Length: 585
Image 1 (cartoon, one colour):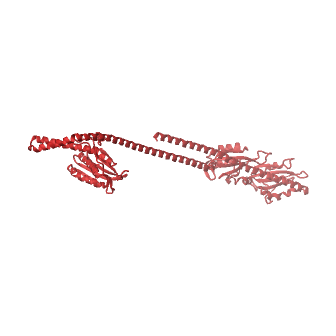
Image 2: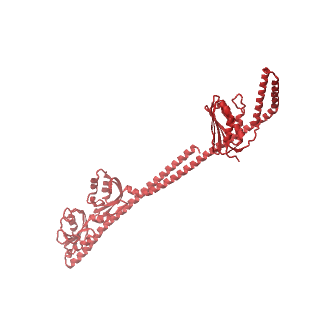
Image 3: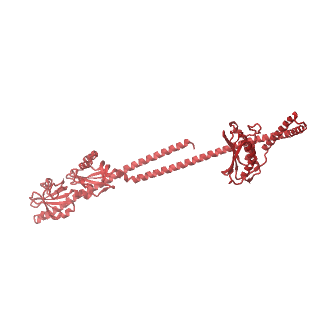
């Protein structure tokens, strides 16, 4: 797999990640919109439930007044004074947040009020002009009127927020009279709204027709104008949206949902965006539409988002898990592909090297065959005449007087004949080597025997021999005479490369199932133009050399199924011979 493929695969993975992330974000946004709409709908249903309960509460009190009107007529027929029995119902009505019951006897200017125990109350501030207007409807006995919220400035209920419900009545003599219920507006609102929760921390609040809080989870807000108390609490908040919302939607009697920004929420300080649902709670439906309260439920936006937080977390966990699986799979595939590619490249290189080696061996074998054929002819054609010439020259030289000039010439003929005979023997050994006799032997002993032969020549050249033999080596399959020939040749070449003396390092060791023999010198290295041909037959830089030494070494090592190689530079040359520790099958 090339870098181009890796780059393309990485780009595809990144695009897949972006696509999955985009779909996840879109899913989160859609889920948030759906949950927000459902949450607002839930808040609206709760607000309508509270508003309905408040409306039903006042409807029940109207029913109570109608029941009392029946008692009024019955008592009027019996004794003519029905108003005297009304206070007995004060305790029952108190359970429905009626703070006081008032009775207007015929001909009296003001009602007489009784508390829950039936005890008369001072009339101061209990029946304002609005209360009188309800009872003074001429010609409409039995009509029940519901007043707006008011707060007496004095008297028993000073500072409390009340609603007056009045019903004008008349006896059989058409004398005017009536009943008045003073309803605790704050108690009614708290009865149905105070303990209602929206979500975890959302709460309800109730406003009267003037925008004053009748119920709120913060008691300090009750009885205060809703916008004024908020501005007083935190003047740094922009309340313009809430102001518009209160005036144009909530107090206008709309039913719906919206949002606004607050400066706190249940002890948390700071700007908080809240969702709010609201609806009207009419007190006198069908008769006075403007006489209505407003019920609202508010909850912070982050809490609504928290409702889907776990869902979103799970969603992203699934996305992350999917991405992790894809990434791990991608990385695994890439790793395996790269590993396979590396292994394949290594195997291809190995095969190529083996093929190249086989080709070189084949070429070498062809050369050897040609040389062998030539050597056989040379040996047949030259060796016998050469030996005769050398022998005749030796015989003639022995019969000449000492110091004779012809004796010197005969000596030269004799030495050159011997040199040519040696060359023919080397060619014969190279082209027709004896088969190695491989046995498991101590390779270190073979090295020591070779060093013992070479030590005088090394000392004569001023070469120091440094020997490091691994004593833990097991017996190594080899032909001791043949390997000794290799070592002697390598040591001889190393010694000749160090004309001014130097250091010869000989080491043995084992690695990867093979034993290594290393011969390193400190000569000037092999010339660069000769490095590729050092193992070729007749390749030499010496005037007296035949160029067959390293070729013979390579032939012997290959016959042992081993390998010979070298590294060289201007500081010296190191030859390494590797032999298998186990004989090949």
